[in-house]
Image 1 (tube, rainbow, N blue to C red):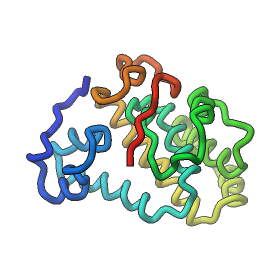
Image 2: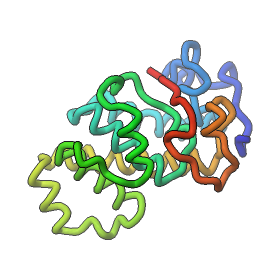
Image 3: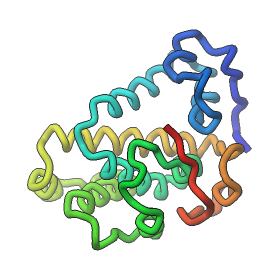
Length: 196
């Protein structure tokens, strides 16, 4: 059960309603914005950060979605684990997601995806291990601009995913993802939710 109350969308400021597309979005798509709306100006900031990463993305949708999901398993963010974005639909299967949730890295992934997942692992669990040697590895496969993009995605997913986990928002999720706070959830917990 969510730890803070949801602010009804009709009470949101017009700019937040419009930006979040509150009139057409599902409850799952609105997610923690319904709680963040208690501080609407701050909510706008976090939404704009995420939107900037989405609209200015240069890296493949698949790579970003695999990175997002891997960090979601580290965070144990139920909504992050349950959601599959339509922008990456058809680029991987749930078997791959299950391997990510088991904290293995599928050997069939291209080197760039493996390295991005390794970056996500380190960012989520041991950020100080992202040293000069690791940057040498990153620079062999990614441009400096792509590395910045990866790091910004890591920052968004670790920070907002942990916030969502702490807020324990599970009401609209499939039952397998709505386990009690503190219980470990795996990607095979239930059918994922498709969102735009």
